[in-house]
Length: 197
Image 1: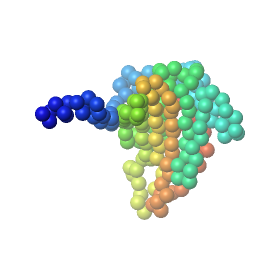
Image 2 (image 1 turned 120 degrees about the horizontal axis):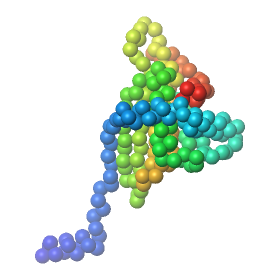
Image 3 (image 1 turned 30 degrees about the horizontal axis):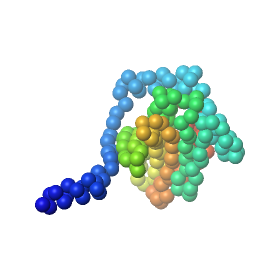
Image 4 (image 1 turned 180 degrees about the vertical axis):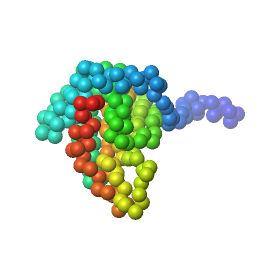
C-alpha cells in the first residue's frame, strides 16, 4: 500500500535531481597549442588583441565600446573582463583565452592548473575554463623577499549553455611580508597586451 501512495506522491511532487557539478583538469593538445601560437602572431590575432587593449583603455576613460570591457578593482585584486561579441567568434574567443595564458608563460609565470568546471545554475549550464598562474619559486633565496612579479593570475573563459559569455583576467597580489611588493597592475596590462601576443 505504501508503494502506491509513494508512487502518487512521487508523481505529484517529483524529487528534484541533484544539479550538475563537475570539475576536471584538461590539456590543450599539441596541435591546438601550435594553432594558438600561429594565431597570436597572425593579423587577426594581433588585431583582436589590440581591440581588447584599446577597449580596456577606453573603459578606464569612461567610454564603452564593443566588445565591452569591465574593470575589476580592489586592494588585493585587479583585473578586467570582456564580453563575447563581434568581431569574435567561438574559435577566436578560445584562441585569445589560450593566447593570454601563453603570454603569462612568456612573462615568466608557471601554469599550475588548467581546469574546467561545469555547473547547473537554475535552468542553465555554466562552463568555466580556467588557467591559473603563479610566479616562479625555483631558485628562490629565502633570505631575501620573494619576487611575486604581478601576483597570481587567473584567466577564465565562461560559457552559458555552450555559448561563450565572457573572459576574465584577475591578478591577486600576495600581502605576506615574505614577498616583495607586486609590480603595478598598469604595467601588467601593458605587458599582457604587448604586440608579441
